[in-house]
Image (cartoon, rainbow, N blue to C red; front, side, top):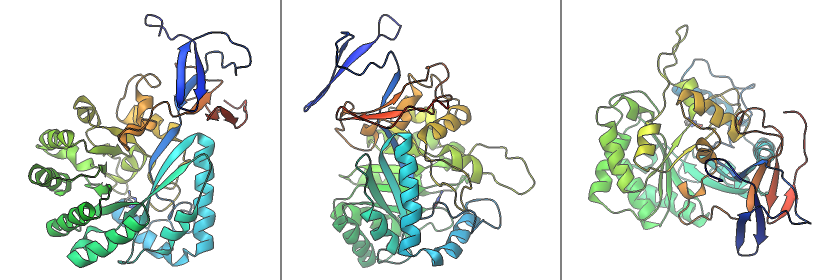
Amino acid sequence: MDGDQPALATLHFREEGTRIEPDQNVSGYLALNGALVLPALIEPHAHLDKTFTAQRSPPQQPGLLAAIAAMHQDRVRWSADDLRQRASQALSWAVEAGVGLLRTHIDWFAADAPLAWQVVGELQHPLCTIERVALAPVTFFADAAQADHIAAQVAASGALLGGFIHSSNWDAQAFTHLLQAAERWQLDIDLHIDEELSHDAQGLRWLACYLRQHSFNGRITCSHGCALAQQEDGEAILEVLAQHRVTLIALPLTNLLLQDAVPGRTPRQRGLTLIKEAQARGIPLLLGADNVQDAFCPVGSYDPLDTLFSGLLSAQLGMAFDEASALICQRTALHDGANVLANDFVIFPAAEAASWPLRSRSRYRLKQGICYGEFRNDT
Ligand SMILES: Nc1ccnc(=O)[nH]1
C-alpha cells in the first residue's frame, strides 16, 4: 500500500517462496499492470460424489432431508465410471476457476469405505490438491469398535474424518466415539453439524462442552453451524470454539436454498451461521460451495467467486476484494502453518476491485512462476 492506496509490486518467485518488493520495472518479468492477484483459491467444502446428478434425481420436496432421500435413490447409479466422469468434471471446473485446494466430503453408507472413496482418491490434478472427508451419519459411530474401524480406514487414506450431526440423528455417545476415534488415529475432523434452524440442535453446544473437558490434538472444522444463529447461547458456544481454534465453514448457497424451505412460502431466514460474530472472535472462517447440481442444490459452478458473491449479500460482508476475499483463499483456516505466499496465485487481468467478484471471469494461474490458462475477454 502507498498510504491508503494500493501500490504496484514486483513478485519474485524463488524456490524458498515468493518475495514481494516495490515495483521495480524489471525486464523479462510478466507485466500485470496492476491486475488483481490472490493466493490460489480454496474450495473447502464440496461433494464430488453427488455432483451433476440434479437432472436425473431431483428432490421431491424442498429442504435438507428430502435432498438426502433423493441422494439415496440416485446412489444406485454410482458406478466407478459414473463417479469418475462427474467428479473429474467438477475438478476441472474448480481448477479453471483458480482453485488450488479442494476438500470434498464423500458419503459413507456402511462401516466400510464406499466405491466413491477410492474413485475420488485416484483423482489428481497438477494444479489442485484434493482432500477427502469421510461423511458418515453420526449413528455409525454409536458402536466404539465400528467407530475405530471407520477411523482406521480414513487414517490409512491420509484423509479427514467427518460426520453428519443433526437433531434428526442426535446421539451424544456416538459423537464422543467419533472424537475419540479421531484422536486415537490422529485425524483432523470436518463435521456437518447443526445444519438446521432448530434451537434444540445439540451438536456445537455439545462439542463446546466436550472441548472444555477433553483435549483434542487435531484440527477441527465445523461446516454449516446454522443453528448457532438461533440459539441464545450461540455466542457463548463461539467463545469456546475460538479458544480451541475450531474453523467454521459457512455455505451461503445451500444454506439459503435448504434452510427455512417451505413449499409455497417465501423464506424468512437466511440460514447462515454466526459469521460476523465468529470473525470478531478471530475464529478461522471460510465460505464453501457445498452441493453443485445435485438434489441438494440444482445450481452451482465450482467458482469460489460465485460463492463469495452470495456470501457478500446474504451475510452483508464488506470490502469484497480487500477483506472478504480471504474467505475463499486463506489456507491457514484449514492448515496450520500454511504459507500464504506459497508460489501459487490467481490473477484477474481484467478486473477492478470496485466490481470484483463480478466482471472477473477472466483469470489465470501463476504457480511456481509458470503461467497457466489464457486470457478470456468475456468479463
Ligand atoms: N448440505 C449437505 C448435507 C449433507 N450432505 C450433503 O451432500 N449436503
